[in-house]
Image (cartoon, rainbow over all chains, first blue to last red; front, side, top):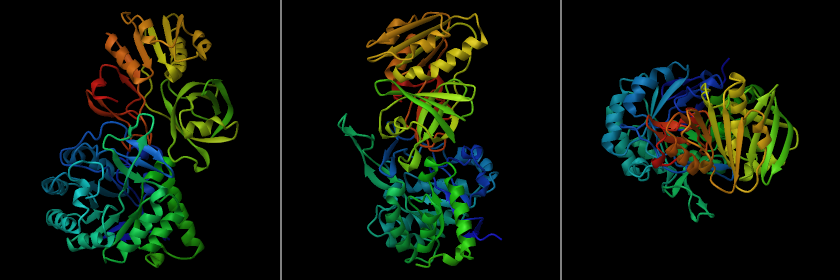
Length: 299
Length: 233
């Protein structure tokens, strides 16, 4: 009996554990290290219409219980994904979530249109990347612009639409409500927190862009609070993420209102972290003679 | 899991770690060494100095908290991912191996393997150090000639006009100089900060003539002519 299967906006996931965008490539790299078909889903590296070479300079920096990144959405472009990566990702035997970023409204719409021909399960609209100079997070800070871009993409895409939110916003509840009002089928949160590091030897910022995105255990309690707030403000499902590294972390997010969870940075520390989480969730449900859906949003 | 057999200080801040239970590496490959007890989040990529009979030796310098932590370990187990990366192509004929600082590390296994493949070939090794030399005898075991430089530019001591394959690993300015002076076959082993180590996160991308490549997966070894040095790595 599967105590872990969940339904995420009409898509059956074998369990609620999803690899977070930007940390798992297109799934094929880690497939050499473990059986990725055991995952509930994989959210692919964030795509943009024309692709990107990403940011110059240092791209990752370890911090206490976390890390900063400034990759800058390096990706091969939507058309190359559709042609080269999509079928391979589908063959991995888990739900395929495609993360789509953009520098302009036109980028998002054209990208979403091209992805209509792709065999994917969910489109994750990235209005929250902190590491690109134009667009990205700019679309996700104000509720009005979240609602607008969500509505426009909703009109274009044939896939279930999940909007990935940034914590850099005045009210995460208002941001989630805006996505729901625009027609989103789900929201995922949180993307990274804007942070900074300075190299005191060179007396310069570590990153060329000065600011970068903070992830890892350091952000978990804040992310958990935001997921709780968002989940109690909307009726569409919330996918929670932010520093989840253990089954206990995942249980907390699910109790707080996450229908599913995403894991990113923890995979760098331990490539099989997600399998441990899945095994831990299974063991917890068995020990408590319950189903993962029974504890959903109980707090 | 790998067992720590020994962890020896061999120079100022430089250590030689011997592990048991790691699969044999191809010359030029590296390991992701996970720091125990959750002391650090990200694993540290360290290139393989040598491996034989089930024992793998890693040469590393203490540069931060992660390597500091490892340097205090005298026994027990380490979680390892790898060997990872492409490693050096093993061309036939004469070889010139140029290492700067800790960049000498992958050249030991490389030279030994090149010698085993062709016992009669010419192998020259040039090793540059900042303040003190270490482990140079390990290179004399297979090299016809070992050039050692302390405090200068090792690239000034190398004849780049020979009909040989050049293998280079060291600080980026040194490799850039070697690439500019070399005319023939030259392979460089690049270093970049990494997170995943398997090609998924794109933290370690470098610009090449073929577009961006991942140091951890497409590298760390690249044809020196393909690297776009002017873009910066």
